[in-house]
Length: 391
Ligand code: FE2
Image (tube, rainbow, N blue to C red; front, side):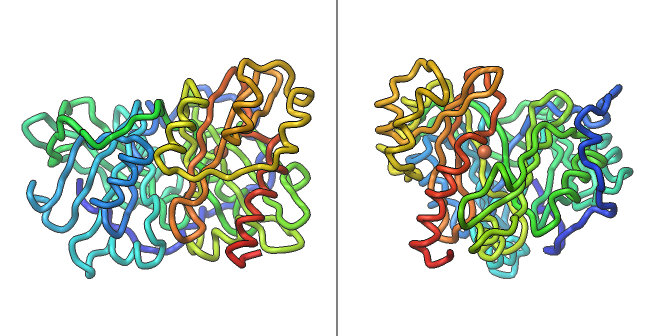
């Protein structure tokens, strides 16, 4: 896969949207951007070999493919990690003059591309650029002995891009140019299944611009929204809208900061990233008790909520299958809506910069993103911000 040519400037959609609620009930007769799901997430990192070791041992991902100088990709090395349908690509440049090195200098180790799986990458690129997307890679083919894949890319918020990946005529381990890695003795799987959602933080008053981008340019619709009355603590607040594609396989909540007494967690992210970027990736499991126990044993650090959170939990969420004592021991949160309940927990940032973190989520009918947990959770985040001196 070629390096995506792109400039490190913020791309702002042309038109701001005054009434995003119009998308809530919009009738979609045809989906002009049919997505089969998230194909992979590509991170640019300072040292991909070591970052891969972290995601294999701590998060239990398996190394399945590699491309680098040994395989003819002379300017960078990429490690493809997989668990269930979750696929991460960790890429590092070989030389400091590489464009990727500039990205890392600016943002640290970070998500660069949210790649979407499509049947027709040319069509996806045409439909989105026609609607105002900024192209970062015109459709191109790459081939090897396993067939041909088609790749294209458009700009999203900040320096994040969406890559369209068409692989219907490709049967290799990942993409042309990658060598399969057949077994991974280092990986310690924890039961991660797929990406539930990926959240972007954008700047002050930019949320609706990006809601409009996902609606107008990508055909997504509004799934849920929260305002600062839902999401506020004494100090910090945010506003959030969740955009989902036509079949609901891809969900992108977009956050912006809201006024609070002190610096909000979103402002902290925007200062240190700096600018808009991916805040967290939510990974789904069928058994959160087992997954989180293993992740803890393997060194993943999670946010803790106070024990008082659990004292009225039963009253708040009603009957649940999991013993509350076990949830409390692991620090797992619960929220309920009219369709069921969900269990979730958040890691501490996985970088030294207070930027990217992960969520582990198990849905039992609920479509919630954890609104009922925001207050307890944000107070936990603020305790950490306080420790970092950023509150
Ligand atoms: Fe989330």
